[in-house]
Amino acid sequence: MQRTAPEGRGPASFGPPAPAPGLPVLPELAERLFRSATGAGPEPVGGSRDVLEAACGYWSRRGLWTDTHHVAAGPGAQPLLLALLAATGGDVLLTRPCAAWYAPQAILTGRPAYHAPAPAECGGVPDPFALLETVGRVRREGGDPRVLLLSVADDPCGTVPPPELMHEACEAAAGEGLLIVSDETYRDTLHDPDGTVLFSPAEMQPENVVVLTDLGAALVPPGWPAAVVRFPDTWRGGELHAETLDAMAGLRAVLAGPVAAAVALALTEPPPVAARTAAAARLHGTLARAVHSIVTEAGALCRPPQAGSHLYADLDPLRPALAARGITDSVELEDHLTGRLGEPVPGGHRFGDGPDSLRVRLSTGPLLGGSDQQRLRTLTAPEPLELPHVAEALQLIRSAFEELDNGVRSAG
Image (cartoon, rainbow, N blue to C red; front, side, top):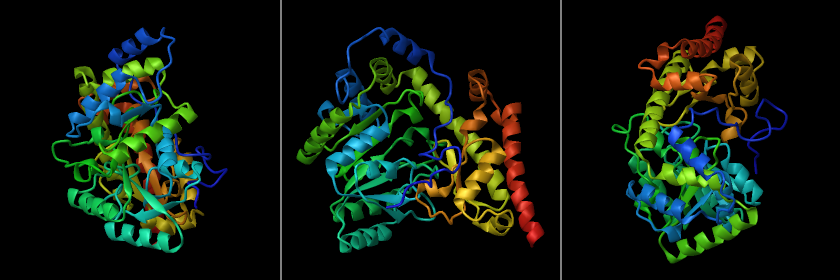
């Protein structure tokens, strides 16, 4: 079982990288939280009826009808996934690469986690044939794979799998008796929602899919931990829901009361929330495309980002120049680029890739600005790339990658 990061290296040495500061808090959400701050009553485990009904409406608008008996809410995706894995038991299958926080949850429950590679054109969903091979290998070695954790709009690559790949992967998982946990945290952050087709595995395998959504990616500020989870409308789904609530009770994983009130409002997606979500997705798309252009012009490989606030660059074509600088793996690459850019640039070893890879995740969050005022100006600017602080940050990235590119040319 491989840990996500070596100890003692880089600014995010002891766990997954922390998220960059988000956009300023919407006044409507801040007001709702403030009005609820004097309430002293504790929230129930799994969420209040207001939150659960709002979550049902949220999923129904996305074609996933559900009822409050098959929904739960908690203080972020990590404790919800931890409780869910404790309820399911068995070994966990992940993609390679995958979000940095996935494997630690399996580790905390004492479950082995195994990686199946994602296809070259996208992340988030395993190659179906590689998944079958991995399941077979784990079973031959005496393992007990029960859960496949995948993502419909993934971290770290920021890509959306094509529907046919999603269908094939879900069919392969169902054929092996795996429960699919679909992380749909970034489904509301599509850069081009009219041009990108996104399907939930729950539309394809409704009886075998649990949907997990961390609301901090799109609907509420990332500093207000909140997530919701949807279980299948089956006997097993009801049993799993109850067992997950038991585990959440043991963890005391409950929403804070004022946050719960704001979450209930955000999940109804009133016009201010919907407008902010759409504007933020467009902005991150603009910034991600600019960063993608810089790193690919420098010779790195990078899938075009389609969602979220990050992209995943493979610097293997620049390996000769990096080796000349004493950089031979993703740990050393993380240290170099973090020092050069002044922001955490987590290496591929944090996302399930081998440490000998030369991959890093770049985030658009630091481009927003250092203050709420700057970030709001970035959000509302007709041409955000022309803002001085954005142009300066992009130029810093360009300079860092051009140095590596020039090193390759010199070596050649």
